[in-house]
Amino acid sequence: MDKHEKIGGAIEVLQEQLQSLVRDVAERKRMINSLRASIGEPPLYSDVVVEQLGDAVGRADEFYGQPLSTCVRAYLERRKQACTAAEILAGLQRGGFDFDAAGWKEKDRLRILAVTLAKNTKTFHKLPNGTFGLISWYDAKTIASARRGADDSEDADAKEEPDEPAKGSQGSA
Image: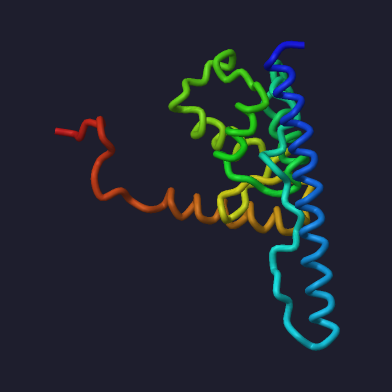
């Protein structure tokens, strides 16, 4: 076993121990809030959700050679919450997703990822706050309503007349 593997193993053990401590802290906060509630006092802690350490990537090669949609779905399922495109991009990079093989230039990756996720409406849903979640997490009526709202705003944008011609277009002379 080389030095890299030994250190990597030690890091994994420490992360597991730290996650256990985080769970213990959350449990104690819940107990304190519960005791306060029993005497009519408001909770002291609003952050009693057990946070996930890191960004939910299990292995450094977890996403290598996998389709983008599969990787993003796995990442979101592990995080158990909607995430920004930047968080997803960082998680995919740490999980070994090969953006170079996909032909994505480094400076364009965030934009391309956000557009790709927004277009894949069968799997992902873009929330009003700009984060992306899995469509399966949300009520069908909420999704339908959000889509109707997006369609209405796109129609309104299309009806607006531009004040100036678009760059590069030639006016009639």
